[in-house]
Image (cartoon, rainbow, N blue to C red; front, side, top):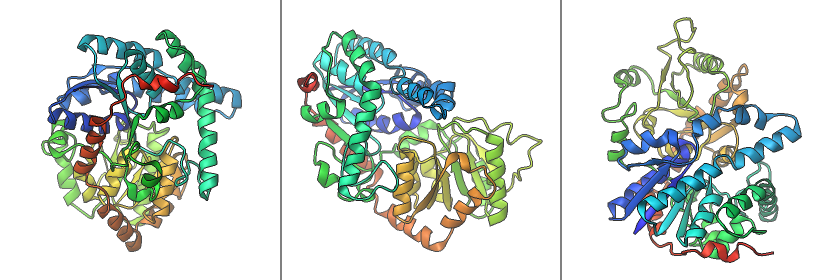
Length: 443
């Protein structure tokens, strides 16, 4: 079979799907890979021969639209920004995916993540192809886990999800029908979750069932919970990130050995508003609590924050670039991170308690789930630079009881190789050519 991966968004949106692509390739399938332009080098290092698809996700996340307008206190500006971000890059994704399909002579299945799923579904419908999707958190209506902190009970939880689906449909309906018109498809009055459900499209839930007990039973085999996806050892080594076999930071190994296990601090692709202030908060928390910290810059520039004029103690706080989570996190004692699904899974697998400094999207949900499991606490990311906030949050998780709960939770997770195999199995078994349109124009 020929599977076309249409993957846009940040590294956390793309890398887990690349692990599945490698497994499908290992099974003898032809895998054609399209990723956000800024992530082409990542996929190249993994040997997947990618082509650029959609728009540069780092540029979008660093834009005024995301960093300023989406956080505006003015309601009209904020709604306009939310609508723009929801459909950002859809034109480029549509034209790029059509061109990719033409170049390879078609496909059996289009595999996508959550971002851009509306476009991928419309293209699959237009070309009569099967479709499968990867979700890294619960994003469909259910009675088990709420998208809003403080909501309790199955009925209230499902009602909140239903409201959220209506809000998103209100934000994206015009843009989605615009894409359908460009493809020569009729307009739809039914939002995508319902259409995919009615068409029987497989939506792989790429996170661990232990964190959301009961959800697998509610959703059944069409939305299988596979566990968190991660690259295998050989693929990780090809990335050559700090901590991996052949990684580029030669001094990191010695620093990790030269003292107690540190607290890991990393916010991945999330734009840190004030890197010097964050680094100062990390240093102050370490000094107060008597711990060390390893800061991974991710998509942020900490070079000025750690420069010669900085007051950070370099023996106490070390700043590096991207790190190999699977190699580095087991050598740490706790983690401070943004609550992205990929980092959450890696931290849990390492058995670490966490402080989730969340920004938006699914991140508050993961913070709440970790808090409920007794393995973490959550704070809004913008508060972590306020005096005492980070130190206070860390003091709540740097105790023996929380560490024991986090280690026990990590031991219960589905192993990464089994999770990837289960996701590949689900995609292998997805046969729904052209069926997305069957419910696309209902009343």
